[in-house]
Amino acid sequence: MRYRAKAADASLNEDAMASPAVDRPGLRMRTTGWLERFRSQWQLQIMILPGIIFMIVFNFIPIYGLILAFKSYTVVDTIGGAPWTGLENFRTILHDQYFWASVWNTMGISAIKLTLGFFLPIVLAIMIYEVPWGPFKKIVQTLTYLPHFFSWIILGGMLINWLSTTGLLNETLQFFNIHASGNYLLDADKYWTIAAGSDVWKEAGWGTILYLAVMAGIDPELYEAAEMDGASKTRRIWYITIPELGTMITLNLILSVSALFGSNLDQTLVLMNTQNQPKSEVINSYVYRVGLSQGDFSYATAVGLGVSIISVILLVATNLISKKLNDNQSVL
View (spheres, rainbow, N blue to C red):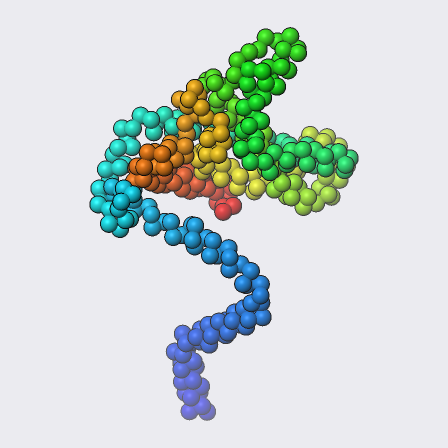
């Protein structure tokens, strides 16, 4: 018996010493299982191949071009052969008054967009959700979604026509005996409002889709119980609907704040003119003008890289703040 116990202890010790190697067969089994699933679904896997190639070509390969921000590049140079200048392009940014003017315009327009464009889709989604008549709800959804599918070439042309001296806005105001004249797009002081308002008009309806999807999954019994307790519709929205939308609201807030230094280049190129340029020049249009129009590729790359870094910092900071306010839980 004594020898049997020693043999048993020895065998246990051998198993314990061999335990680190147990993961190897498990890894081989998982790899084999993955390959078998891949072979059984190879038709579906091939369908995502164009998307992967697209991301590699247009998202990952261009990252190499960021080294232009630290070089003095001209069209006769290669990216690798251009001379290095270190941080000289970034020092130039600090003293470029036109760049800082574009930053001010970008932040001003983005602040208005954030104020209106963040809350309006939530309110609009709740209003659509509470509409009891199905056909009317579909009509409202169609009309609010429709501007999203038009390009800024079309919508910009419409706005230029509507806001002209003899456009729809002035004609409507004059119909109500309100004196109105002049082309509003030629007034630089009005551009921020026009740019932010038209962008919200274009995207507000489309922004309700995610909120409506979340509200469709809310348990109807919550509303029934609240109604039985005597809660009004306003209180049901405040204490049931909005808390259920909390995660989606937080996610959209994080993405909106991180995009404060971004701007709609298509919209700017369509609506900008020589009269409103002091207020309509945003960072993206400034990079476009300096890089492509003036050929200063290195400086434009440095501006774009700096703005991207700031946007990442805003994204991380907003996410950390949301975690602190949400019991250390992140939506990302």
